[in-house]
Length: 146
Image (tube, rainbow, N blue to C red; front, side, top):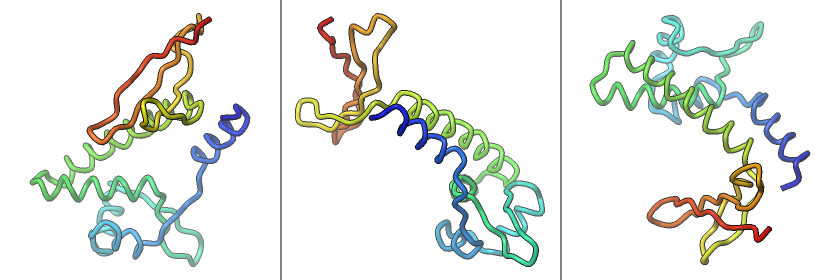
């Protein structure tokens, strides 16, 4: 992948301004609008709201709401569910950063799609691939032949 394109795409993803209305978040997660408003008043989630506008939730907040719902369904308290979901959100942001920092393109290895994660080290004598198979993703190091 072209480095300039990769950097621009990472910037767009980092600075995304995709927002969903409260009804969209409620429908996607199964959490009622009333609960969403309550969670927001308690400080567990946040939305943006312009003058005279409805609440708008970011995509990452949608994911956090869903994670909280799953944890609540497992028996956690609201406070613990919010804390765990926030921690998981941080982990997902880091994983996204790693992918955007290392993504060099797609290829095929042994008949399976593979993500090119670039050179393994500064010597540039091997490339790291994440090979996606039905039973999971495996890593493969391929010598460059230099």
